[in-house]
Amino acid sequence: MPSLLDPGVERDPYPLYRTLREGFPLVRDELLGAWLLSRYADVRAALVDARLGASGAGPSPACQGLLEPALRAAAERTAFVLARRIAGRREVDLVAEFSAWLPAAAAVAALGLPWEDAARVREWCRTGPAHPGGRHPELGGLLRRHIARRRAHPGTGLLSVLCDARVDGQALRDDTVTGLAGTLLTGGGEAAAHALASFLANLLDHPAQLDLVRARPELIPGAWAESLRRDPPAPVVLRRALVPISLGGTTLPTGAVVACLVGSAGRDPFRFADPDRYDIFRAGPADPADPAHLAFGAGQSFCPAAALAALTAECGLRALLAAMPGLRWAPGFRPAPRGLMARAPRLLLVRPS
Image (cartoon, rainbow, N blue to C red):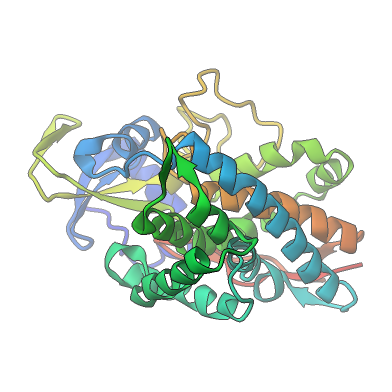
């Protein structure tokens, strides 16, 4: 039987995804120790099924109103600084010099944390998935120290705003503030960095579409959503059955691991016409409850990590195009995405002008 751990899958998983969708929509991957779901409808249903340990509701609308303005302002400032720093060079790697730094640095800036924390946070984002809960154990301690200081001596950053916020007349608990800040710094950081790298690669691979976005910035959200559909930063999302559950006529026991193949779902031809093609004008779904991509889950009204990723994509692209009017691939360079659980190009060599 096919397996995600077969040779070559990390380099190019799409032939395997096609095989799974066509012949094995639910199959046990013995090497991975998980059941694979590969079709769009099945993956979407699994991501919102609480019996599979789907994440709970996101922040309240009141918290959303606090987060988004601060994130946008920080993303704009940080993207401008990073883009101007590299604009005068003859050749630049946008991963090492831009996309790998922007999300974590923007989150640090939005929260009002010291700039020197950006390097530590970026490293923790990279190592976080190896730890329980996907979060580096030192991050909680760092945030709790900053929260204690902000409660005693309020500042102007988002962390101070959250510490001072009231929802239904009640102050946010420390663990709530820590959870929101931690989601921005970790879940948003690495996923957003990978998503931003793929977004830039898709547009640079399609110069005509890049020119349209340059001339009509209102097209950026559609271009971003299309990149997430075609090249999600986390192509495989793992869930664990909390109770026995029936999927595709098969009953899985409590504790069974289900691998939701988001990367396969986004290229399901039964959901998307010509799914391998990148098209910023691809029509969105008629049903708003049925998202065109599942890169940051499904069924959530607001996700801090998704909001950070979208803002860094928009602000980052605007900053790059303003600082580098002639942005294009370096001669002879072609991006090579790789990765199984986290996927993106690791190198983006460009000429700024």
